[in-house]
Length: 170
Image 1 (cartoon, rainbow, N blue to C red):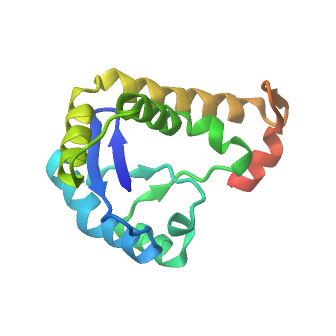
Image 2 (tube, one colour):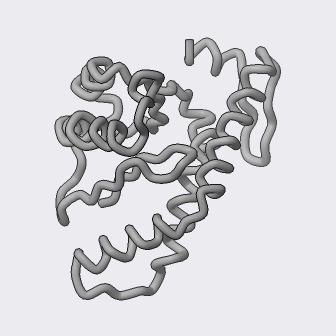
């Protein structure tokens, strides 16, 4: 399993989970504390003195009390997103997954090291504009939702009450 933390400048941390293991709240909290924080310190100097904002989905390891305590101890913030617009605001995550799937679809690798090297090379070759544009889309969508102040935002598949969303976020 692959976990990637990124910002507008590209990947901050790329973590490969051992084969056959799933991520639980303890492992995720340890990753935040022992891998993400040092990666930010070395790759994004000064960011820890400003603000680290995480965009999580509602996966159990992200929502567990242990993780919440770790995030609080690190003085990171989590952008709280109501599930009805999670997919809209998290579109960059999906774009990254789809791009990843297209890139490696049908390829065969000799071992885990070859997979790791291929993914690392792919991420290094990815244009910075890809992640920047995706994050800007999240900001644009969030701003539109907040600006509606209770009106409805319609898309092709659903209607979302923004006032309900904002009340749940606050």
